[in-house]
Length: 505
Image (cartoon, rainbow, N blue to C red; front, side):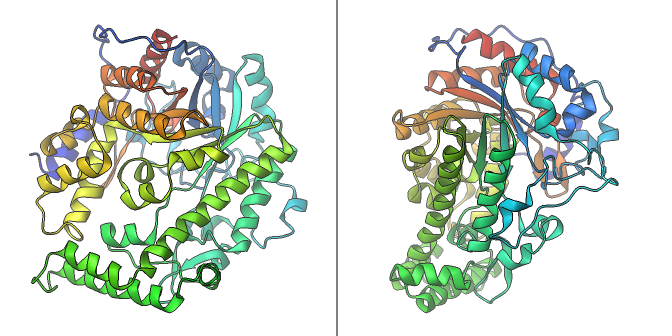
């Protein structure tokens, strides 16, 4: 098994060749699914790429080389798009990645209408002339060019973290979660009406003022119980709004808070190696959950609050534009490894308020993510009594990974997961929605690895990428989304993606 240092060294060497791709090997024959000509083939990207590289040039490349027919463009880039290191950005886009880092990019790519924000104290970042591209209004500019090419344009709207919200959104501190000690948490509270109204106002503002085809929306957070047991995080949210919601459901606020506090203090002892060893960690965790069933109930209501926001976003968009395509983004922890989220919210339930569901199925980068973000963290806490190999076997069994999709522990870092993982999870999603919503498989391409030492390039293998496309379609996907971000994905990888898409058309 390679250690972390060796893995990082190999990844860094790989990043030096981010603009290169060897000739594609002959592709194996696959059962040809239904024609994909009318299927959504999308890509996620920031508006800045169109201005960096040229709007029509990018559109022509995406359509002609990558078989893209749907653009999912951020309305707001609050996610630090401007400070990623050059070595994780694609070097074959015709511009030097070194010139794309540490820029003062505008965060808002639309013009907001103040009339829609009367029921919330929150306000979006206001562009000023000192920010690059602050004068650009991406959807007004790109829609005509996209329509000429019969390409659809959807907004991608992302939830903010606490630090980004505090930096860019006026009054964001008012809507942050509160932990068991009363301190601000890491994100907004889904039960806070001020936050909800801001989300709804943003959606209504955009659909009233822009001629767009739809939206992809979704949060990238899970629940307090997962973060506690898997990462050792202080549990939240216990604000007045969460208390009101839960007490209305018959859940005792003080019992829930006490249960989370007891469990948190126990996990801290596990991390320090000072916990009582008479029973295993898991036995003790289950003891707390049985003594304080309010913990599970509180955690479940947190997921319900998120689902209510998702449903209201869908409803409000449809009221404004009935033919809008409203999709659901399901991040990697939700799609793949969080057992509490998976057991609380099914794809079938999501399908009642989503025209499409896009689960993140990043086959390559799941390897190191599973190794370091899941197994190692759980080994220090809830699965402390198991070896890493045992924990991996348990993960595969719990999450329903078929034998063909299972990768040995020592291959997770250097190889990542493979096309069978994409097939496995696409098929599960398709079965769960049962025809009530379309399934758009989020195929990871050249997704960087968030190593402890910083972002590291993790270039995709062209053959495995194409096999992942084939397997997603064989599993019944209604479309594909090239992910994570256009500016990270090499053109050579997008060509390989496009070639695979055309093979299933």
